[in-house]
Image (cartoon, rainbow, N blue to C red; front, side):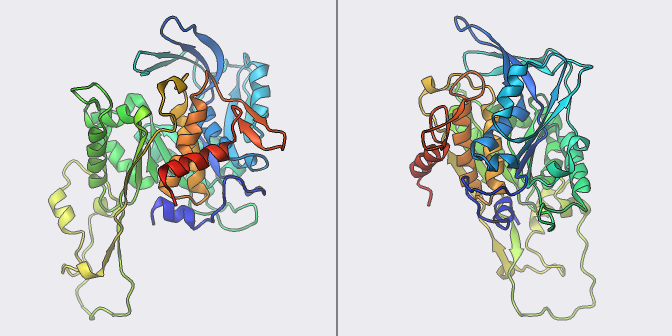
Length: 422
């Protein structure tokens, strides 16, 4: 079952439902107070609400007006220097945030710098407080989706630990927890060819991997740019996704590549399954052949025989070809454009990718298809990049929530019509 099928089995709630439904989204991204430095003549800004955790929670929150805002979970570790104004701002979002006092340390802070191509440089200026599965409360562990931003190795550890801690827990209504959706955002400094094998061995454990265009190129040992124009190469993105999907032919997972002004590219393995029929196989005394564990779990090894792997995909346990008994899901290959098509609309790209993933994750948790979830993410990101810092939430005269003076649901409907979604 792919991520869209899994999510659809959990219901078809909309972004504007009225009743709380437990936790839909949790991020293990950190809270960071940002200082941002731009190219002259734009002046720098200080003490800005930031971090992958903050912006991904924002993305989920934009599609979760109260009382649904309680379905967004995240964690803030407040150091001794935590500005009261930021705590007041966070409280206005009305999310299920865990605010934890850590008076023996400084709040995690970071410096951000941008070049003329909006490529970001980042460094921590105080020691970071990394989150683990042990930091998740029982309530947060019941979430329908989890956003992880980490290395391949740590991603595998987190997924395993979260699944272990979820065992035995139940929904707020006392039922069994649905299968969690895991969205993995690789950390930029470990998107290298040396980590490619670790990356492919992580893919069977998650539902969505979402690097940006340069991070994906880093895994492939490429620049990801068109050599003639210097722009982001859509062909390089498509080729890299095809290679990653090909490395995991027995798995169904999605790749969502965030490509700045190009939008995002969606690629998902369709997977194969046997057709259901009433014809029984002839009895046989031959024991079914066991496939190597690497093939069963999709892990790509240094010595994997790819030719043999593909040759065995359509064979039954006795070794005969069974094409007529196979249903093939064609999967997904689609570009979703960025919401903002005019460069002047992008004031500050900080956090845009994280906000995108929050919108994407909460949409999947509420039963949306991968394509529609990406549209949620694109709209969420559009609000994050319209100003320095986080957008401003408010309300109109009728009590409808506004973001930057605009209703989120109406911007989404306009974008949905632009994309010709049914």
